[in-house]
Image (cartoon, rainbow, N blue to C red; front, side, top):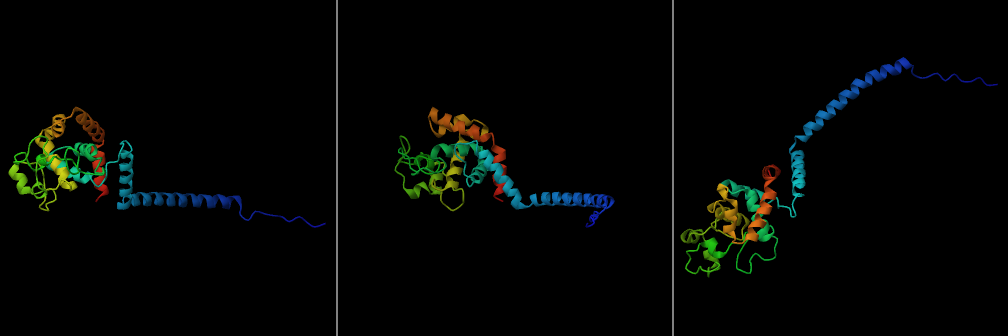
Length: 231
């Protein structure tokens, strides 16, 4: 009859405990180093941008239409120059042309561009053809000429310094709207009156103020997230 083999453990209990005791601090060290390495990686620009993009997306979920990120720096720049809340400019843009997504930038009444200016308001009501609703008989060259606008007291602005004040250029349009709203009190907090002057309609005022208040709840957070993300 064959003898049974004596299968002794390769490592004694004491050796195993010793190895475990040795591996624990190594594991803790690896964990700590990995943790701090990950924290350091999160400070890199690409991780900061990803975090800011996530923040932007979370805020935008509160809106029926996303505010296009490319427009927010323009609103903010206009806010800094004219003192009109950038969120109010965004609200006007949302109501006027759904953030410039409508098929035509000319209304049935003759309002033009991203923020729907009547030609006489843009170039100035002192223009000899201006009356009624303000469509006038204004040539394209007159409408976009800063000197002509200054002559007739209009609200058109050459925001990007290209020598043209163009209601179909997003920067010029936003700055022109800010200029208008500022002149009618928005920069001093008289928001409702300024919006009414932009369009003498109670429904229009209510619609713009609805979006203004909605956007303004995230005024600083969305502004900071977008500006950092665009650096």
